[in-house]
Length: 122
Image (cartoon, rainbow, N blue to C red):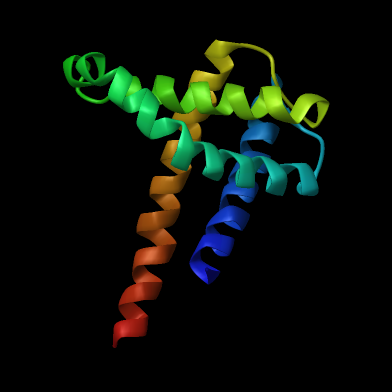
């Protein structure tokens, strides 16, 4: 439960960073970022597996790169649910944001989380 809460806060921080990086990606505040992060995590559990199953042939042919499109779709769904507090101006921006979000997740995982876990084991 604590790991999930930390993951939600890290995702919210990443959404705020991406919001500062793209002019066409807007989050109204920290509370909206936390709510968007929570909503995206729920969508990743409920909707994303269904989308992956539907697009499996395309995902295999593109060697997994189509997963960025699926991530962009989940971002757009979250934006549609949240209304004015979370706004993405276009699907192209959503794809670019999903790529940046994935890269930031990778950097945080490799640079922060894994070293902390290794130090905890010692």
